[in-house]
Image (cartoon, rainbow, N blue to C red; front, side, top):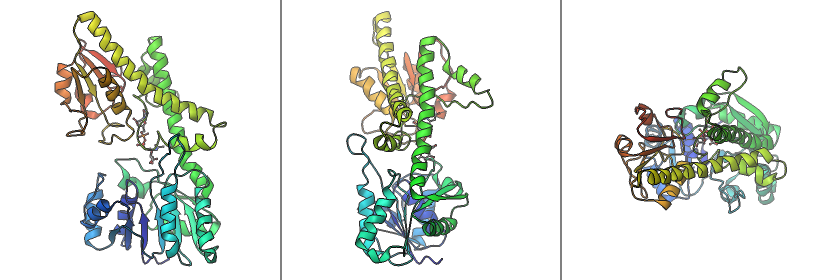
Length: 403
Ligand code: SAJ
């Protein structure tokens, strides 16, 4: 199949790296974004998102004329919808961006085109978009291919994983699945697994919900062990010696724009059936509240015992170790809650950020030296270089010293 031009709608965390990899393969790619600043940045050969290795590729493909950014789509042979699917108030999925992107390309569609949704979506979204397309362009029914193909890349390793991870390809019919496979074969070296659109939509939600449930189990264990006087880190390490047990690590809660979010796509559509998935979300959210309360009571105990307020170091703001991304970060939530009750003497540390528009950041070594109470929220590598100090109160929510 010859692709004269490939159109990506949405140049964010997934759209931009994918568009640049496809352009790097020699295809002509037009990237579309509603944010004019994003369009201008990319057309300068620069990036607005940090992902290791991406800036170099974008610079190269823009210079070579293979990647162009625009605010509106142009006639192409393949259209990929990679826009956000946020939530309305009560965890109700919002597919309005997917609908808007689809409406933008409907007038451009022609026979033999391929239309793909990559955005994490509620089950049935691809069918809905197919209906929308054919309601406005009935002559295209059976003449174009429509598929759903979720991404599963890990922030911080996107460029590698976009090429090497297996992909699930779900067409609305057999021909669509085949056409989508042909397209992904041009840049994906991982295995391509064929299915239908609804199963592919559900697969994405299942992958992240299963991880959220597993993390909730570890977090629940940490609450039980705190009360039982058992070291949860040692417990999990021992239990995982069993050949068929693999318990994940407790943390200060679950963050990011995926694991903490995707399970709600299921619970909002299947509230009665998704008991464990719903409860796991509650447990992971509660863990963050529990950590904040632990810190605050430790501060109170210190003041009662010593007659002075403690100096406190909040170690880590990112949503996971060794990245600078604070989206949906439980650590940020905890820092905010602790500082609501006490500003004085609280130092905030985030080694992956130079500054923050809300928190005044401290150097992690200085904060560790000065503080009476140290709360490790995120297992950044820098923190693992610190020596354990038994003259300080260490709240180890991230397993730095595994105490
Ligand atoms: N976490 C724990 N304990 C663990 C593992 C993770 O508390 O043992 C926490 C992390 O600290 C973080 C959160 O969970 O706050 C999510 O981190 P993550 O590394 O599990 O997930 P993400 O959000 O960075 O990326 C996930 C990945 N999905 C899976 O691993 C099933 C990635 O493959 C997906 O592509 C991505 O979501 C997405 O875009 O959906």
